[in-house]
Length: 432
Image 1: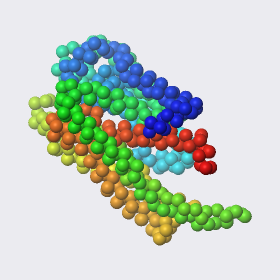
Image 2: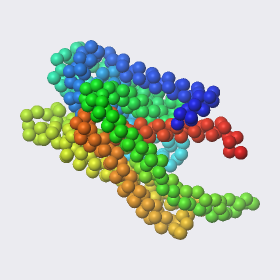
Image 3: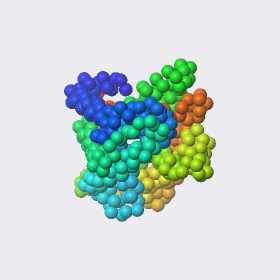
Image 4: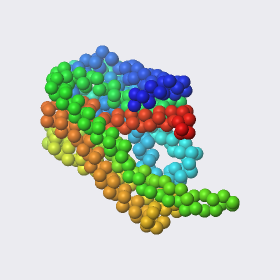
């Protein structure tokens, strides 16, 4: 990895792209510390110190915003509205034929879907910013805090706050697209990587300084290295389904006769099942926060569903991850469509007839691989939680399975992007 970055910096074109990407990431982090107009920054810091670690739900949301949400900064919403909008648009392809038709149109259809994603992102940003501001006004964002974080609760001031946070989300979306067009790799993924990685130093200091001591700190690092090794090994693994193309005459030219393969990753769903499972489990806790705390059902939710240490929470978390692995894989990989495309271009799997038998074979392969991939994803998500519970270390630190999976996955993908661009510029190596 370091060698790839070293060669990239010695290439002028790639060096400019890397420096541009780093500059955008720095701007993104600076925006996370600029308070929204109308928010008392001093009072926010006081409330963070007084209520640190009091809510697992807030800790999860704050993690994906790089610590900006609890600071009520202009980038308080982070990249989550765009991620949510992208997932919704992708899921709507199943129920809205127009979206599926646009997806099949190629570049023009993809551009139209991207435009719909932007509009939905802004709508979700307005909704989420309103929710955060309402939560902050009611005192649920920082429970039992002695000072108000929004001193002026007039309609004009609250409206300015909503507009500012929404504009911050639009700016983040634009920065991510700039990285994709002029930088290295997927811009949105790199911004998520930046948000999560920014929380690591503080978490390490909290473990070594007072949360667990030096001994537990070493064990936590060892667990993280073990999980990272597992993630790298599995994410690089794939099942290669061989495909043979028959020879055919077009005019006076002979086409086809080549061999290739369909690469099927063990974890085709990525981190999406973990995000879906975490979001669904966060809903009961969010509802319970706004209800009467003396009621029995509210106390049961707080003790069993909202707490990450609860056996109910862990069991439901694992089951939801398994379910969404199969669900999301079924949406993103269509065996019938792949089989039809292969048949159209004269391709076939050796030993399998083209058409329906090919689709059934691909469905069989996908089902078996997804079974292993869902178990792997469940282990990655739960191993850090079990380890932290055994060590009596707070589970609300950014070393959970989803965080490690995102950081390692984005890192591997970025290195692949850099390597591919290096190979394009140093093509003479292929001629030796």
